[in-house]
Length: 284
Image (tube, rainbow, N blue to C red; front, side, top):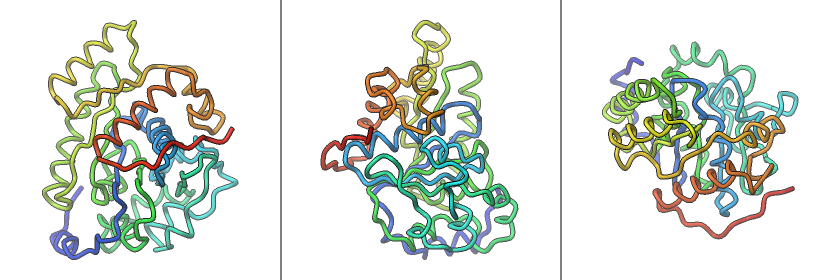
């Protein structure tokens, strides 16, 4: 990710007064760690607390969109239009089945945005500028990043207050996260002085597996309080819910997966001092 001095200087003059109260990117350059699953269910959990939530699907695979019931046929313009065509966010966000949760879906053109951004003006700040133009309107904005550290992820980090890192409880997991933390440090120095690691979420945790315990212990030893208390377990209900285009809370609110993601939402609210008006009930 190469920076340009002129863009860095311009970023200091970009209007930020209209930012949402909390903008969080979910990122990990390693795939298969539960990043999108966490984005979907954390967004749902926050909305069920009465918060107004927007999920931006910045991953060309579009799994966050599918996981919230927005199939390809139901998608209109989405994140590509937001980044590259300056289409207002109000024209792009769609309702989900969860009251208080809207999504800007990943449209089919997003796969080409990584290349097009290379030559675009203010290429690192396209998402930040779009959110500033849109005004706040939401208590929380979550951004589901692609499993890479390219320009799409860079746009998310530049636009965000913090980054939540899902960490799979498996061998080699800590090696990948150190690279992401270094990237966050570089982005903070060059583009976004407010950016910080808002939390590391241990996913796919299996109490029957000694390796899960070892990874969790190593993560807490190395990253300390950045590691969140909530553990996301391996739970078949989480996978089943995604196949039905629903959050796990809406699919089976009594499952261990649903309770874990509700606990994660509680922890994110506490860590970010979010004010909640009270829980809403998801649609059946």
